[in-house]
Amino acid sequence: MTFDRRTLLALPLAAGIAPAALLSDAAGQSATNGSANRGARLAGDPIWPPAERFALWPGIPAGAPTPLPRPRPMITGRPGGYRDVQMRGVVQPEVGVFRAARPDGRAVLVCPGGGYSITSLRNEGIDVARVLNGFGITVFVLSYRLPGEGWADRANVPLSDVQRAMRLIRANARRYAINPETLGVLGFSAGGHLAGSLEIHHGLEVYRPVDAADRLSARPAFAGLMYAVSNMDPGRSHGGSRAQLLGPNPDPAMQARYAIDRNLRSGDAPLFLVHAEDDDTVPVANSLDMLAAARRVDIPVEAHILRRGRHGFGTRLPASSPGSLWPQLFDRWMREAIGPEAPL
Image 1 (cartoon, one colour):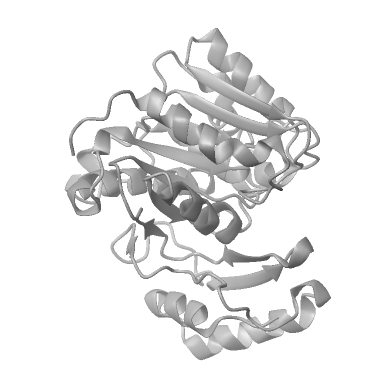
Image 2 (cartoon, one colour):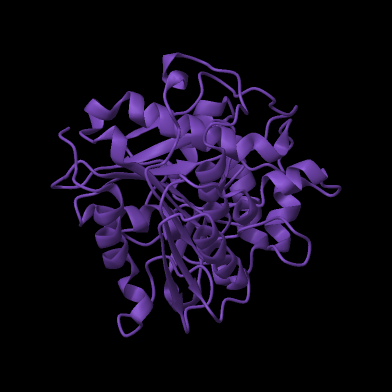
C-alpha cells in the first residue's frame, strides 16, 4: 500500500506531529496490512483533507489524552479495486467543504461511519459529497474524534464535535451561500448513530461554549440515517460501535442516553432511513426500530428497506440495484422535508 504524501503531510502538521514520524508509522502499517492494501496510489484517489476545510476547535480540544493520538490516514483496498480513505487518530477534528457547481442554498453535514474506530472518509464522505453536489446541495464532511482513543468523557466526544460543526456552519452560512435554516445531517452506520444522536441531543450541553457560534442552535432541519446503529443495547446494537463509544464497562445512563430509537420526541426533525435486509454488520432491525419509534411520536419518516445491499455501500451499489437510487430519493425527500426554501 502506498500512502498519498499530501494526505499524510497535511494532518500531522496541525497536530504538532512530525511528518517524518507519521510517514514512518505509515510505512510500518503498509508492511503488515496484507495484499488487499498493496499497490501504488491511483490517479483520481481523493485526498483528505480537501482544499477547503475548517477546524472545529481553537487548538487541541478539551479532554485530550497524554500522549495525543497519532493521526493515521490510510488508503485501503476493497473488492473490485475500490480504494477508501480512512482515518484514525483525529486530534483536531475538522470539516471538509464540498461546494456544488450550482448551489441552491441547501446543505447537509455528512458523518462517515466506521464503528467509532475509524472514519470512512471517501466511501461515506467524499464520494457522497460529490454525488449530492450534483443536486445543488452544499456538503460538509465531518472528520470527528474517535471515542476509544483516550479522550475524557469518551461517550460524549463525537456528539460534541457534530454539535460544534453544525453551529460553525450556521455561523458562516453567508460564506458558504447556504440557508442555515435548512441545514441537515446525513450519517452512515456508526456515523448514522452520530447523526441520530444530534437528532435527539442537539441541545444537550456536552462541551463548554467556546465563542459566539455556540449560541446558535445545533438542531438539524432533517436527519438521514443510512444503515445506522440505533441503540447501544448489548446483543441488539452493533457490538463494535457500542464498545468503542461506551467502553468496556458501559455506564447504564450513557447506554440509555445513546439509544436513539427510545429518545425520539415529538417535534424532532424528519427522518430518512435506508437499510438492506441482508446487512450482516448492523441488523436491519435497527432501522425498523427507528421507523416504529418515529411513528409512535408522530415524526415524519420515510424508510427504504432494500432486499439486497449488505453494509457500507455508500454510493457504490450497482446501477441495476434499486438501492442505487437512494441519492435521488434523498434529494427529493429533502426538498419536501425542508419545505419552500427561504431566501439566502
